[in-house]
Amino acid sequence: MIHATKAQIRKWLEALLHIHDSPHRTASAFALGVLIGFSPLLGLHTVLALGLAFLLRLNRVAVLLGAYANLPWIMAQYYALMTAVGAWALGTELPPGFYHSLRALTNLSVFGSEFWQRLASLLAPLLWPYIVGSTAGAAILAAVSYPVARTFVETGRRYVAHYHQSHVPRDEADGHHRGD
Image (cartoon, rainbow, N blue to C red; front, side, top):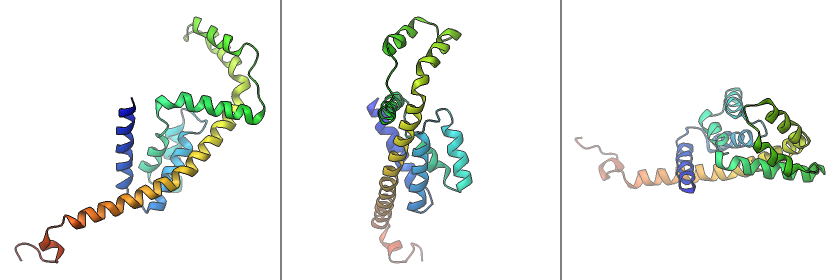
């Protein structure tokens, strides 16, 4: 799984280098995507990312790359941690017997209404901690992702330009074309 994550990140970073916007606009679009991707609005990330990219005239690819940075195998841990941070910040405590009630849900079918009713009543006290925690986490990650993405794009483009300059055939580098 870690190898798959590294490969995916490499592909995303490579895509960021080939966006024909300024490093500032590319990094801004990516950071906006990260803000959306780690926000509490699960299930709306793609729609929000595309809508805001169009509205703000940002590169859709960069915004989507940021939104999809919240990989499926880290989502549960991220939202659980950010809900705990939100609960701490708001002074919210778990209801008595929370873990026992959560474990008891495994005995019910997810296709039955009783499962969903119990789950909703069990998680209701955590709604505000979830919203506050994941919004704060998304804002922090977006703030960190902007300078990282900008530095990456600027450095990557300099590297690509240097690589292409050093690999141009001598005739073309002197302004002479073969066959002239």
